[in-house]
Image (tube, rainbow, N blue to C red; front, side):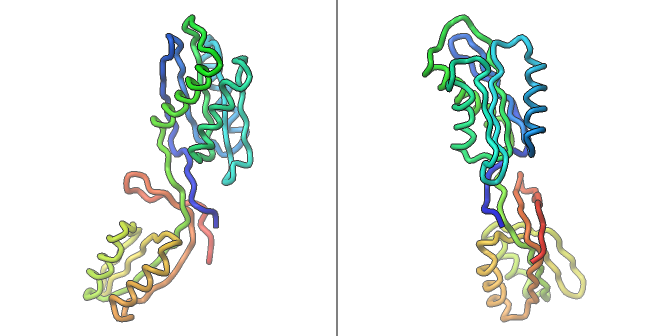
Length: 221
């Protein structure tokens, strides 16, 4: 299973101004080179009158596919610095276009690098960036006497409960990070004197957004 990594969940747009030049960064989640190129073309069409539309994208768990373009800015002053921000922040599956409207004052090589980098950071600040991590579904069946103890253990690490059923017993389904599964199961077993029935179920990749659980790439154990 892959380690946790950051990715763009919802795109965003941010803007900075440097010596009257406007730098507008559009950030978009992408899963393939085709999606990235389609996004880039769409932004270029929208901003057809701009001085430059510089681009960068990275795709894959290990940044297997990366591309960048200076779009006629001096070589190495736009696309590569933009890509370096994505890689430096370890953000995956993301494309960014920085549109520049020239303000009449030359920025120089260093100024361009700083401006394009800052624009990407501003765009990312307006996007929703999530951490995707490996987890395991754990079901816990217990009597009502053990419920409070189990809830306390889960709440200690703010572990999300996906499902709960209350009948003559209680059934909880929780989402546990892979790194905590042994600790959590041991704690529940000890707290309930072995009375709780634990079932380790599916592995998945998941992320949390404002308390909402997002599940990805489920696989059987």
